[in-house]
Image 1 (cartoon, rainbow, N blue to C red):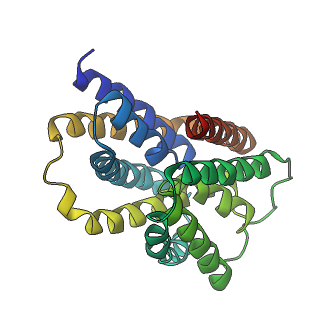
Image 2 (spheres, rainbow, N blue to C red):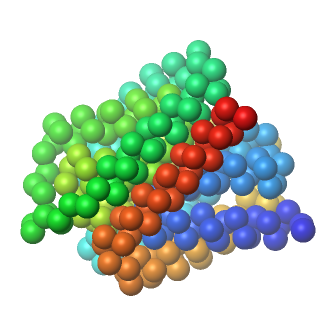
Length: 247
């Protein structure tokens, strides 16, 4: 199977996840770029940021039109991710297996918390700037160390820590992902010159189309079902990373 066809298929799956669940882009894109399309890890992480940025921005606009984005909460949350830079520096001193195991544990705990049945709040939780920024800073530190997980950890944090409903958490997570991905791309600008744009272009285009389908899918699913699907996918990712780390 040609690289372009594989890129189209992988892009569609990643776009569907981002549009429906508000996360999963980097967690799914990086392995696809490495194992299916032959990218080096450095090139894969940079290419993943390109794909995730344009796809998240597209999905964000669709969710915003439906009123599912909490702009103030999302921007405060994104502004608190500065510790990601410190976490990234620490990551260079840790073994790769330790990073993978740590991420798997964090992801599994977040998923299990989301699987616990709780009645949804009657009204949206008020924005608490300090708590929101602190949650964003904590997520930034974790994702900076582990290297992946922006959306997959942002959604559980927005639901469990800040009390957003699942649909609002999905839309707001896309805002956080877009801001963080743009910032990360700015830092990595020097690594983009050698990328295979003949593969990345179809990958990104297919992901954008998949994000629109994901948004329509999320509109048809009850919030509780969407939350459970997200948690189960997150558990599956955690399990795969754990097995890969210890194998």
